[in-house]
Every structure is written in C-alpha cells, then in structure tokens.
Amino acid sequence: MSENRTHSPDESERANAGLATRVCELVRACCSGLWIESHEHEDALRELAELAAAQDWTLAVWSAESGLRGAGADPLGAAAGDGPEDADEAADPLVAVRALTQLADGRRPVLLVLVNLHRFLHRAELVQALAEHIGWGKRQRATLVVLAPVVDVPVELQRLLVVIEHPLPDREQLRQIGREIATEPGEWPEGEQEMAVLDAASGLTRLEAENAFSLALVRHGRVAAEAVWELKTAALRTGGLLQVWRAKDGFDALGGLGALKAFCRRSLLCSSRDDRDRRARGVLLLGVPGTGKSAFARALGHETGRPTLFLDVGALMGSLVGQTEQNVRRALQTADAMAPCILFVDELEKALSGAMTSGRTDSGVTARLFGTLLTWLSEHTSDVYFVGTCNDVSKLPPEFSRAERFDAVFFLDLPGRTAKDAIWELYQRRFGLPEQPRPDDTDWTGAEIRACCRLAALLDLPLTAAAQNVVPVAVTAADAVEQLRRWADGRCLDAERPGRYRRPERLENNAPGTPSARRRPTRRR
Image (cartoon, rainbow, N blue to C red; front, top):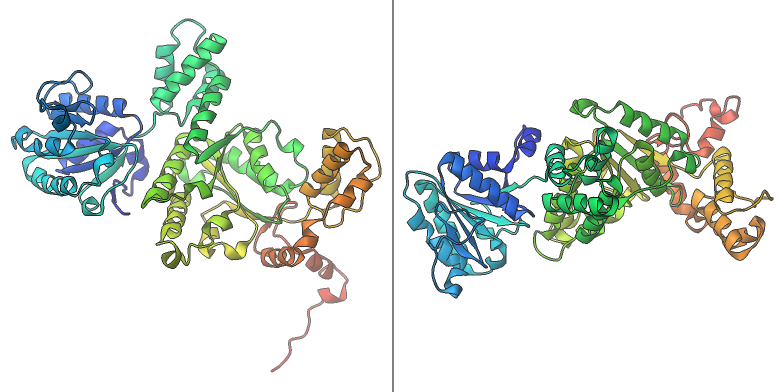
C-alpha cells in the first residue's frame, strides 16, 4: 500500500506541529481528502472544532453511532438535527458523503469528518462516492476527513488522500494534564521527580496519561513515576509491538565488554538533543550467541537512566495488506514519543534476511519493512538510541551496516580470561556458590558460565560436576562461530578492548618476533 504522507525536508518541524496547524495548511492548499491517523478521536475532534471556529469554517461530523452532526454545531455535543431521521439511514456513511454537496457553498471551507470510516471501505459504492466527492470538493472548498486509528486506504483512493498523524502529547502537554489532575499541594512533583514522571508518561495518549496520573494519586496520594510506569508497561504490552525492559542492574552486573561499555556511555553523555549532528544514533552488535548482547541492552538502559524498549520485529508482520507497514510506523512513532530511550531489536537477521528476495516471496512486505527501518535509522531526529543485535551477518542486507546508520559496529567474541574471571565471580555471588575449583571453560560464553553456576546451585553440585551438563556453542556450532570471527576480523570494533577486532589466531601470528609477522615475499606470476 502506498499513500501520500506529509513528509518534507523540514520533517522534524512538521512532526512537532500540532494537528490543527497541519490541517489548516492542507485545507488552505485546497487538499480535499485527508486521512488522520489517531487513537484519540475526542481530542482530535476538539482540535478540529477549535480550528473551524477560529477560521470561520463549516464543520460536520459523522459516526456510525450518532449519524451526521454538525453544520455549525459542536461536534462533541448532541446531534444538531441536520441528519436523516431514520436510524439506519443516519448510520450509513454514504448518506453523509452525499450530504457534503448540501453543506458546501463554494465561499468558505467545509470539513466533513468521518469517524472510523475504515470499517466501511469494503463497499464499492462508498469508495466511488468518496473519489468523486474528493474531486468535486477541490473546486468547492469542501474537504473530506477520515478519522481512524489505522491507515487502510483502498487502492482507488491512495492518490487522492493525504495521510497525517495526530501526534502524541509532548512533555508540556503531559505536564498540563498532570497539573489539572493533581491540584492539591504536594500531589504534583517538582524538579527531578517531575522529570521522572514526564519520562515515564512520554509515549502515552492523553487518556492513558490521565489514567496513569489518577492511579498514582489513588495509590500514593501523589503522582509518582512508578505507578505511571506500571500503566505504561501494560499499555505497550496490549499493543503487542513494544515491551518496556527496566533492568535492576547496570554495567557492574555485566562482566567484560569494557570497550563497548565505555563507548556507549561516552556517546550518550556527549549526545546533544538540540544538535542533530551531535546526537548519538546507536550501535550494531555482532557476535556469538550467549556473549551478552541482550544483557548489555538491558544494562545500558539502567546505566543511562533511559527506558529500554524491546521491539519484536516478528510481531510487526501482519496478515492484512498494509498492516505490516502500519505496525512499523506505529512502533517507531511510539519510540520517538518516548525519547529519550533505548530501542532494542534482537536478531535482526531473522527478520530482514528476506529483504533482497521479498518481491518474489512476500509481495515486498519485508523489503518495505526494511526500507522503513533504514529510513528511520538515518533520518529520525528524536533522542532514541538504537541497539541492534545479529548472530549471522551473512543474512543481513549489506546496506544495513553502512556508515551513519549507527555510531559503531561492535563484535562480541568469546570472552577472554579476565572477562571470564569477572563473570564467574558475578554468578557465583548471585547463586550463593562458595569459592571452589572452576571447570575448564575453554571457549565458553558468559551464558554458559551462568548456566553452570545455576545448575550447580539447582542440583547442589560442585562447579566441576555441573560443567558436565554444559556443551559450549563454540563446539555445537564451531563452523558458524569461526565464519563469524573471520568476517568480523578488521571490519568491526572489539567489544573488549579499544580498536578493531582481530581474530585470536591473527593476534598470535602477528605477535612481534614470530616468523609469520615478517612480510612474506610476493610470488611472481
């Protein structure tokens, strides 16, 4: 599905503009067909009503429940009596569309808002009427406005409708909502506590924010961030696209990865919200399974005081035409609204591996998902730090890891001796295991060390005995691990130490004084 969207070179300013501002511009430009994507119909209708009153426009609203209301009446109030008397006829959107010819006089703009019209667009006669009235309305200054929570435009209307989004409330609007609810002294926080509450409420709709603030008042007698986080987590879980990860531990609970930790901490510390060129973009983590990529994303959120959003790319795939693209836009819009935050996508290669053959296998759905994500990575202006992981780089489209998509691409190899000792100490403390001999951990990952400690505590066995139940991934997938190391050699940064990653064999062969370190003579052909 393709449709006209209000994107321009100055997209950041457009994205921050209110709904009324964008509708006003489009109506003045004689755009006679608009599709407003909104989950907050009451607020959207209120903004349109205020705009119509300020500009002296005619406004009418149709819904399946109330029929046609309007022509100067308050669209949020009772019916004005202008619609058909028969209930079945009033609920028919085709009647409302045809009534537009009676509302328009050609002198001042007329807006006819059709609420949740997407539920009726299976009717051919309605789609045809919309197409004809959009063309007619351009000459008569009459605009049809579809107000719906999803974008599901029939092919006949894709070139006739301009799609815009009703933005979620910004921090100032959230602050205003909170202060209207928490009116007694001490109920609304100040200073850093207020910022924590606004951080927690970012990404919520106006109604969800009201519910969260009210829940906090009932539970604590004041608006507290914890209660807001609880409702926010539940709201995101209902959507099924994003989950909020709130780790209890930071980098101290994650052994090794010194260079990666230092790079991300410094890049976020030096990131500027006001200067797009100095804003941190994120990192791509390539590595052996079990080396701590997911754990790092969790710990990074705790370390930097940002929520970590987990994006399930598999859940983005929809069964209906256009549903996948809609899910991607909605998930990224929510992440932008929740900034500053960390957006974590695990195992990217599984979701994007079919992008290059998407036209032959899934009608281009994966390719469009991939393209939307690439565009967002390069052009998003919000303070969202992206962390993506990959276990098999051969399945990842090459353009995904080019410069300016990420701040850096790191390779997480099997941990070295120092990192392993730190991981052993960490998990022995966590599982209450006393000092004791450790097993041979050659080619073990951090996940395998954790598994050994957990089994030792579970089965009440020494570590050396519990190790008999652990088979390292470097053994079960030795060829894949070696291929991954070979690809990363010289192409990625090392997560353990500053600089580019070098395979262990190459480090040994290139050590000073070894015969292989000397340059070999070039053979003549």
